[in-house]
Structures are given as structure tokens and as C-alpha cells.
Image 1 (cartoon, rainbow, N blue to C red):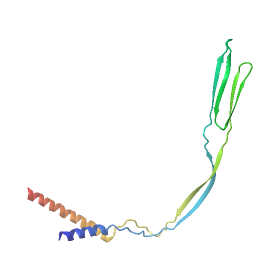
Image 2 (tube, one colour; image 1 turned 90 degrees about the vertical axis):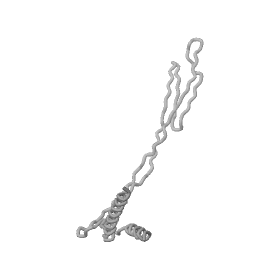
Image 3 (cartoon, helix red, strand yellow; image 1 turned 45 degrees about the vertical axis):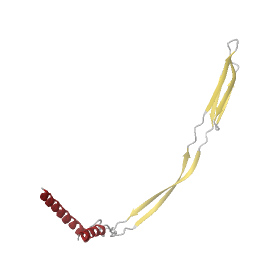
Image 4 (cartoon, rainbow, N blue to C red; image 1 turned 135 degrees about the horizontal axis):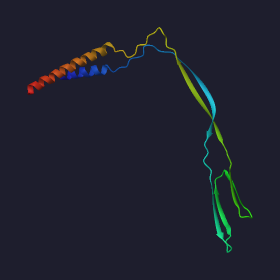
Length: 154
């Protein structure tokens, strides 16, 4: 008898798990807007590094022994040493901007809801009401049984 009660109880729980289909289907209209634009691509930073080796002669004049220069591809430099001892170093960065075409699409969906048709959502079926009622009754019976067992033990 106990196994039959458990099987009936499991069947009641499992039968209430079905989903309900929507009552009214709503027509959906959509249109797409495509916009083309240019996207600027960031270019890595350019740099230049110069190392100069200087020395003094016996008359305390500063002489440029040699210099080393390291630079990236998009930089041009110029180094000039005047007769007056003026050193000028000029860096010219060649600017190159890269643009890539991109397309953006925006989809607008217009939902037309009919005024005369009411839409009912999440209503319980008769069997689901029965399950709720049966579950409450079973809970009360179990609580009374536990209370009686507690009184017998004391």
C-alpha cells in the first residue's frame, strides 16, 4: 500500500510539469537599417632614440666621437652639427591613418497588438488547482501525524 501511495504522489508531481502554449500569436513586423561608416584603426606609437659619445680634447673643447640612432619605420630624423658647436636634432613623424569600412545594422521590430483580443498569461489549469489542493491536504496530514508521533514518544 505504501508503494502505491508513493507512485501516485510522484505521478501527480510529474504531470503538473507541462508547459502551456500561448493563447494568441502576435504578428511581428521588422525592418533593418544598414549604416556604413569608416573606422579608424589605431597605429602603434613611433619612437626614436639617439645615443651620443662625447669627449674633451686637450683645450677643453667638446668633440662628438660618434652617435648611434635607433628609430621605428615611420620616423625620419636629421642631425646637424654647426661650426659654432650647435647640435640640432630634428624628428619628423610620417603620419599614416588607416580607415576600414564597417557596416552597422539596426533591426527595428514593430509589434502590433490587437485591441479587441485579451491576452491571458500564466493561468492555472484545473488539474494544477487539484495538485495545489492535494498538496496542502497532504502537508496537513503529515503535520498531524508527526505531532501524534511526538505525543506518543513523550
